[in-house]
Length: 180
Image 1 (cartoon, rainbow, N blue to C red):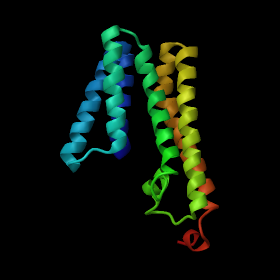
Image 2 (cartoon, rainbow, N blue to C red):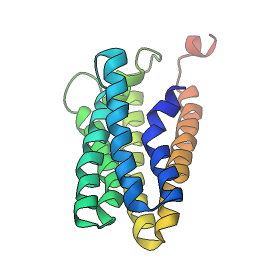
Image 3 (cartoon, rainbow, N blue to C red):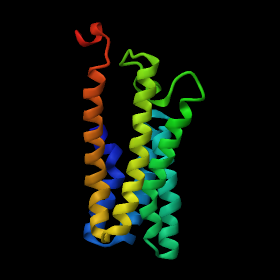
Image 4 (cartoon, rainbow, N blue to C red):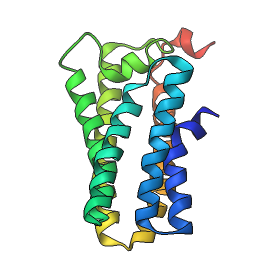
């Protein structure tokens, strides 16, 4: 159920696009992000940093898209988001005691620091590649293809990456961790 909540704005954007156009879909994703943040705040009295960053980018890029009536801005949003996450993961290796991925997953996995660093770098590469791929699809294909890629392509590639990462991680777990 949480995954549906996390992807609610993107799904709403996709449905609105299929029923209307990119500008209606942009208005819908702005409203969906505001609703998502409100629900998260109401339920937990806090909003996750990822939701806040993504929401802020939707508000900025979506508003510009609607004001100047140019879809380019909303098409750049996934790239900027992915590149910000990639930069954040990269910088986290040099500041603080743990890279971001270890902060996110460390309670569930016991790994050596070099493994955490490699895992974090894999996410850095993934985020930068996804940002570049978004630009390629947005500006090499028609608008409908980009909208389909935004939901199905990005989600699918993220799931495949996470599964491959799980396989890689299973080979890095200490022997007592794999016996559980």
